[in-house]
Structures are given as C-alpha cells and as structure tokens.
Image 1: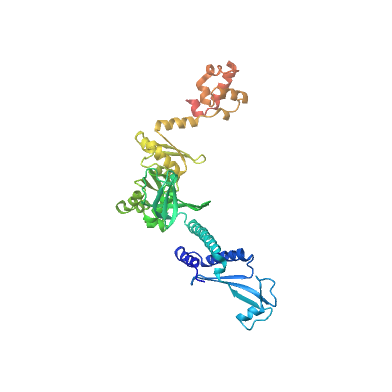
Image 2: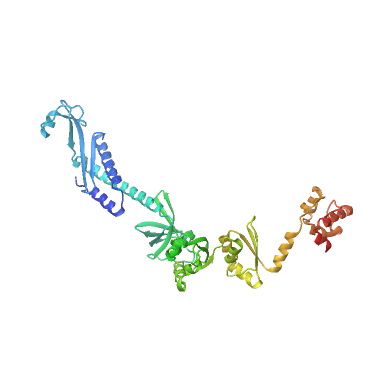
Length: 417
C-alpha cells in the first residue's frame, strides 16, 4: 500500500534526522491499534513498513480448517485452495488485507493519531538534541516580544529569552537576529523549553572563546567572572604559557578582540586582569583602576581591609559601589576600603584587649560592665573610678579593684606609657 502517511514520515526523517526504526515502530503500532479496533484483536496480524519505498503491507495469519468456527483466525480448506492448490488442513494461510476494509473513519483517525505521535517524537528529539548543547551559543531571529520573555526562532526551533536573562539596557526589535547561550533545557507540560541567556557569565565565557583562540585552545584560562550585565564586568585570566600575555591576548591587536565582545554586549565595560594565586596581589588587581597602598587579609573570615590614599577611595568604590562590588564577587573576599587614618583607628580598636580575656573578674561583674557598655580594658581605664561607680551594684572599692585588674592586664609597653 502506497501511503501518504509513510511519505510524510520519510520526509520527517530526512528533515529532522529522526531514527527510522523508531518511526517505523510507531507506524506499525498505529496500524495494529486500528486493526484491533476493527476486528477486536491483532494477535494474528503483521504490519510491515518500508520507509524507503513509502509502502505499508498488512498480513493476517489464519489456520486452514475443515469447518470455520472463528472467521478471525481460521479459513476453510476450499477457500484456501482457490489461492494455492498445495494447502492442507492445519497449514498457515497468509491473507493480504485491503486497507479499504478499514473504512474512511478509521483511516482518518489513524492519520490524526499519527500526526500526534509525530509531534511527540519531534518534541522528544528537540529535547534530546538541545539538552546536550547547554553552554553553546545559538543564533536566532526574534519572533515575538512579550513583557516577561522574548521568543526566538533558532534552527527551526523556538527558544525563550526570559526577562532576567536579557541585558537590561538593550532594546529588542522583532525580526532582529540575536545571539545567546543555551542556559537550560527543561521539560514542561507544553514539551521542551529551551532557555537562553545574554546576561549569564557563561555567555561572556563563550564569546571570549570565539574571539580569543588561546582561550579556546586552553593556553589561557578564565579563572573568574564578575558581571553586572549591560554595565560592567571584571574577568580574571591566566596564561599557562609564560611567553603569552593573557591580558594582551584577550585585548588583541589594537583592541580588536575585546571591541568585538564589547559590541556584542551593547558596549558593556570589561576590565581584564591577570589572575594570581596570591590573594593580596589578586585583590589589588581586582580593585583596579584604584591602587591600594596596603592590603590586610583575614583568611579565616575571608575579609580584607584595603588601605588607599584619599584620591583613590572613590575609584576603588566606583559609581554606586560597583567597582568594589565586582571585586568582591571576583575574589570571594569581603573588601572594606578605608583611608589611612580610618585604618589606624580600626587597627587600634582591634588591639584593645577584651575584658573577657582578663583574669580576676567574676562573671557577674563582667555582665554588669557589658550592660554598661564596657567591653575592653581601655573602656574601663578611660572611665576611671568615677565612671565605674555609676554602674548599678558597683561601689568605690569594687571600682578601684576593677581598675587595678585592668591596668595590670595591659601590655607592658602600654603600662609604661
């Protein structure tokens, strides 16, 4: 039987690259379901599909008997002999089924079922193809612009660019060609959803791989990216070949490489810095264009105090705190930018010895002092006896005792002063 359904499937195989065996089984299943609907059973039927020729053949197997009791599975000897003279009782008789026997309604139903199965197979094929392409840049034409997302037609497939994956200051027009990175492929009630992004750091990484061969080849590594899409990005790079300058390679001759990326990102500012395994050097570079005089690092707390000249503070912080914010994201350290006099005050506060570290003060007295705002030895000494007796439950003698204990706990250099 020459079938339009098979021809449609053959075309689908060619266009979508779908598995012929899978599609052949689908057609066979649909026709077997149609047979079962007409005859009540399909156990003694076989369906053969030739995808190359676009043909479907249906065979019904019957047993040759003397007297027929079941028309579905048996045929009498007299009728069988009309087809071939060698048939005997008990032989298997193969009858070719004329598709016209199914009736127009069943044929139409089969076509509808087939179309539905085609759509399901297409969706599964799209999902399987794109889930292995996460992280790849894809190009598509804008088909529809909604409030919360943009729909693009990429490689004859619908992909979605959500609002939060767009570059905030970009303006999009229907029909415009757009590049984005495939960020996520998920299955929803409507089928596969392919989510793409232009704001993800992954998009920036792929752009650098396209423009900088040394990154694609692994000679230069991207060690970190801190990005505020549409505004500014800091990217840390490292060269595995001492002969190649990582920053210079990324910038390119006359800035051509970086300019191509900046243009793609709607003029987003990009700071490229050399990565270092030494935190002090890396943090200093991350705060560029500011130049810290000194960096104090607390590795345990992942905190940093950056000491800067007065004219460098605004550069280190940046517009709206952006430069420091990006440096924090890039390095993983909480960075505090201070002037020199502020730094000295911070260091002085940290050097003050806490009262809890002093021997000879009971828990009750420590609690009273704490509630009164006295937490360090310097607090007690500055208050003196007059300040201490103002606290509830502390008389002159107790105040003098506390003061003596505090003075004795001071480091020797401070006592001499």
